[in-house]
Image (cartoon, rainbow, N blue to C red; front, side):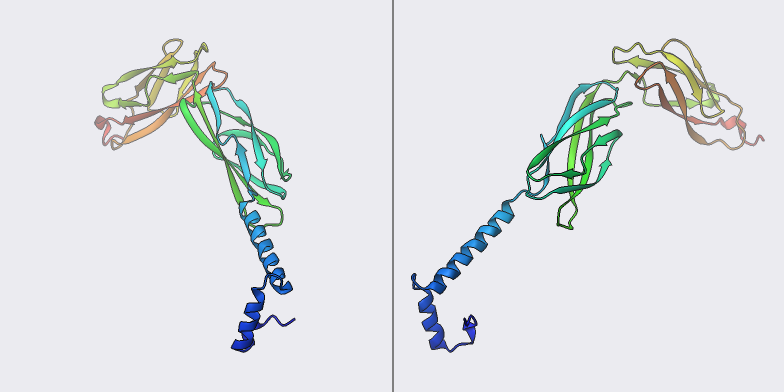
Length: 253
């Protein structure tokens, strides 16, 4: 069968074109049928959701405490091919994520993660990123698992940081404010810089002061106070301290 119609003379081409319009012409019927099949296949491929989807689209834990939380979520393969999970990246302090390596076509799998919320306060958000490939396709896809929670901590400091003037031997008192129902008490406090003094002054209070013994040119520094409590969820925390060495020590060695 000669299909190179563009190489024929114009009269012959016109005749063949007229023949192709004949609804009873076998060649016309074959071309029409082939065209409909190709269009239908293209539409099917374009509409096939061969991607990994999270159901529901956001994991909302609601109100929680600082204790690690295990949450189950569902991943859905809406495509006609296997999904191969290659890598899972935690964008937060998720301690463990359990996801099958292979997800069958048109199926759902139950996954879980353990989210460590120690130190969080109020509304928090984070993501899990799942890198995968569809079987037979070299392209790498990403499925994002958005997470959110409203965290009530065991305790907070009554200040965000402490600023000390070592020239005046200033002393500041810091209190652990109990937010949750846990009976939080201080066990130990420790300064990480030798120019800072710290001592426990009560069940939930401690005092920070400076030692005016530094030598050399005065300069600004910062360090941390390490705080230990009986909190099961957050037994250790840190408070930032900004301080300045006294100008009276200038020139001493």
